[in-house]
Image (tube, rainbow, N blue to C red; front, side, top):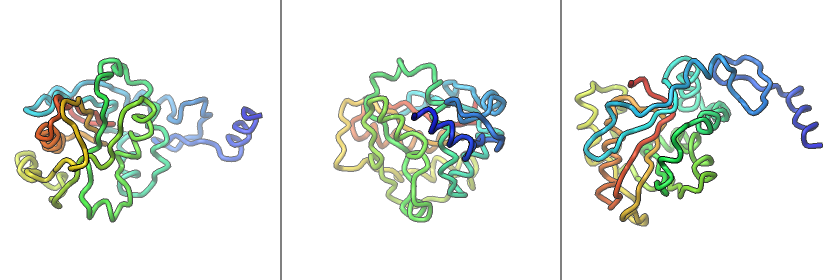
Length: 218
């Protein structure tokens, strides 16, 4: 009966690839094969090893359908476009190496951006999946204590200084000795990840590794 109901829903409300909008038969995959192969490129970003961050994984390239999907999620309030992100999380090949990372924390938005958007896009991407994997997901584990100029408006050398002392770990959170998986939607220069990782280390985390949905960095 459930199978028939799903089939009926597909006929009445056919799924569309969030990358290109093409009609697809779900079959478990919410992205068409072409869009998947254009962006799927899991890797440890070579430039992501910093003083406080033990590297950062990206699942996809920030290009084509993924770029469109993330822009829609962040700026056009198309939360439904995030349904297909779990496909890439399921395909990620190195979950075993992250088994000891029991805590997952998203990079926070400023209070102003959180109020304007109504949600943190990183929660939309990762929260359900991380809980499903048995991680302790702390959506407010890090707090952004001051508003900053959007990183996208700054030159590379200015980004790090822009985020100095911008993040603070929630005083109700205990991270002593914990390995933390730090999450964000996009990795550009790594300045945001490094600043947030520094706050986590200062709060007692033993190791911080990053994970993002997309990046242009090799």
